[in-house]
Length: 231
Image (cartoon, rainbow, N blue to C red; front, side, top):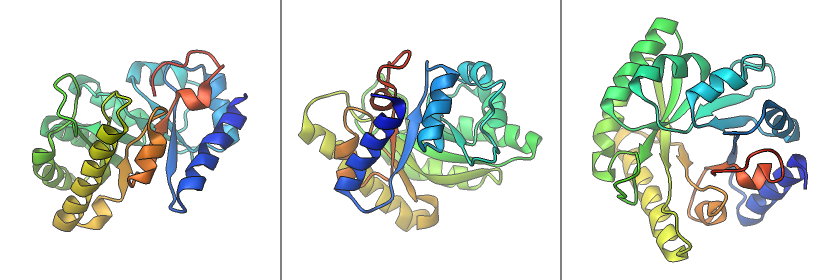
C-alpha cells in the first residue's frame, strides 16, 4: 500500500470508532524527506520527529514551521536542555516536556527568539523507570510551573503506554491518563488540557476508545517506505 492509502486506512479506522476529532501525528523519524512530502500530500498536517539533529538535517530545504500549508512540526522525543534552543527555533510544539528545568530552558530560548511554543507535559503513566516523563503525582506542579512561562503555551498531556499486548493493561494506562487530564482541567482550566496525546501504531485504536485526542503513528503510515522503526 502507498503512504496515501495507509493514511486513508488509519483515519478511516479512527472515524469508525468515534465522531470526536482525533489528530494524527505522522511520526517521520528515520524517514526520507520524500516520505514526509508524500504523507503531507495525503492529508497530514502534524509531523512528529524524535531527534533535533534529524530535524535540522532533513528539513533544511523543506521547513514546515509557518508554512502556507499549515503543517506543524512536533518534537515527540526527549529534549536535552543543551539542545532546547534548536528545538525552539525549528519546532512548533514539544510533546515531551518533563521537567521544570526544561520548561525554564525552553522559555529562555523562546524569549530570545521572540516566539511561543506549544507544549504537552509528558507523563510516565506506567511508572516504568526506563521511560522519560513526570510522575502523575507531580503533573500539577509542573503544569503550574509551565503556566508561569509567557513564551510557552500549555496545551495538554502526552504519554507512551507500556509496550505490551495486554489490552487490559493498556486500557488502564490510557484511562489513567484521561482521569489525570480531567483532574488537571479542573485545577488549571480546560483550555490548558485540550490535547491528550496517547496511542501509537500498536495501540492507537484502544487509545482512541479511551479518550485520546491525538495519536502518533509511524509504521502504520510509512510501511514499505524507507525505514519503519518506532511508532
